[in-house]
Image 1 (cartoon, rainbow, N blue to C red):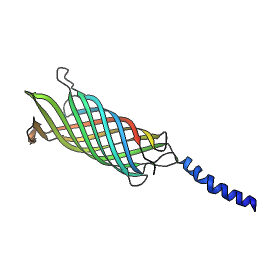
Image 2 (tube, helix red, strand yellow):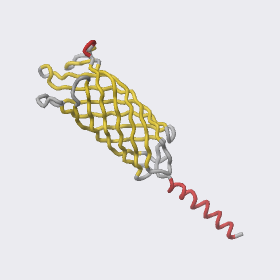
Image 3 (cartoon, helix red, strand yellow):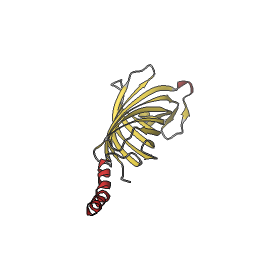
Image 4 (cartoon, helix red, strand yellow):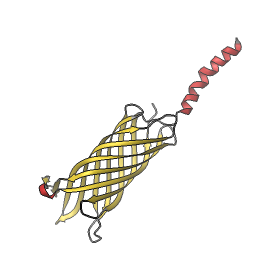
Length: 200
């Protein structure tokens, strides 16, 4: 009788802690990610241009597999023409992520799909006025998260975006359609950063 009682007490006290210890990752609930990015842009019929910068993403996982997220990336780009000035390239994403999640694993691969707004800002194009090209597109990609604790992960990802720059703004003026001068371009972003997943 005493033996059975001791076993029951042991199971009640130790088992929950054992199960928690086996949970190595968490992809449900609120998530925040800060990352550096290497960006590239390839306008149609022009050379590829590269640069780097920072990004921030916020997401919410409805369960361990599906998450919605917003992401903002900015990069300082070096033009292919060495005589030209650097310019800024920005991406804003609203998307959904599917994680191939298993709480007993530290490595969690994922795939993303998003609608994306892009902008390219060129300084002092007309006198002291800046020129901003903007447009939309679709992004797809994926990556992997490595959970070094249940709440913290190192995350790497690669995304491609296709679409057109369809509008231009000069200085403080409003946006105008580019019409026949629309610029088709493909961009790529390689990101590495740290994600925080508060414990539920």
